[in-house]
Image (cartoon, rainbow, N blue to C red):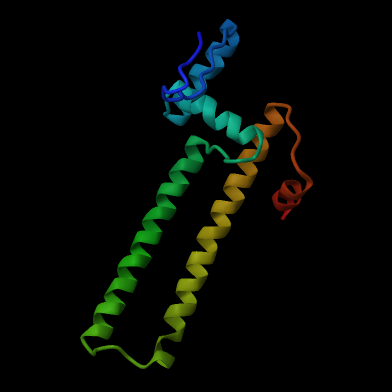
Length: 142
């Protein structure tokens, strides 16, 4: 079917036939990730070229917990800023332990997210019999 030169370009589509076993695996992935089939396929494609790691259900729960920690930190920062604006803030030297603690929490959250996504992404790649880069292998060992 030829498309008109003036008509809008449609997004590329994929139509494929699956064996019963592959359909079952796709259904398991849909249930595991809680996503529609099309999104599962898109994420698997991205993961296959390391453009975006997928997360397991367990890792998704960890991300939710980490997001709650980030929101808590954000609320604390907002309270500090309100105190500064009201003229109730203490000297900057006295706040150094708070800022150091904040930095440590943010660094720990970042480390946890990095470990989680690298490890799970590598697991997916190994299970799909795709190569795992040496850089990712080194990060998993750390």
